[in-house]
Length: 335
Image: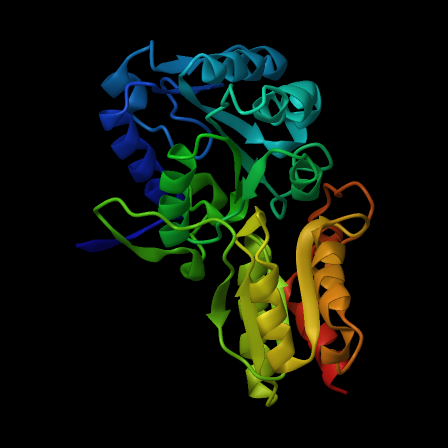
């Protein structure tokens, strides 16, 4: 049986199912015991599982994420709510040098089964220190798997996959797609029919959200939904856009990207992360290195420029990769 769920509730369902059956899983983060975390992924878990398995921490990301890495090495599976990716700076050493590399440096003897839940993205005036994406920063870490679902069905299935993985997984959710009350009405395309029973969604496989023949538009998180809006507008003008949700950064489905661009011959990469040194360049490089002759026109990036995110709503809206900018890029490619 399926129900229509938000991403937040779908993820909560996967975590609850796994925790009921696996005592080694425990949750940790700021405000998780009573509040359930900022996106409600652990809503009600404090009362259900108690303070030994749902641990509210002080505001000390270095401390509690370091503790989580140690617990994972000792045979537990911590699930950590980091809330905002902007805070990774204070715990980056643990991510870069401990959680991601211990399995390799021990010759495979020590596993680090640890799932880090992180909220990303802007669009609601939280300014320069609470609105970044930074997924390229974490995807650049060797040894970490990085996934980024954009809808409820994928959120549940990919969290089941993450919780069954024996490695360090960074699980990203754009704040605007989570479907929690303080973000306003959930975006329709983030809602999904979600089966009650558990299921997995594999990492490293793109999802073609919308078939098209003229131009491929790839995205992650919120940019997928902005791309779908752009595709609707472009359809009215006779332009057929294929929207591809990357879903997974590490591993990245390079074959899936290539297959779509080979069909359309045109590529727009949308990404709310910063322009330089990011995922947008990696996607373009993937196609260029494999077969540059598939391009009918040079590929285009629609991203956030390399500046701090403005607090001002008009300024923030002007720099984000929203549907209008994506549609304009497609029009230029088709001209």
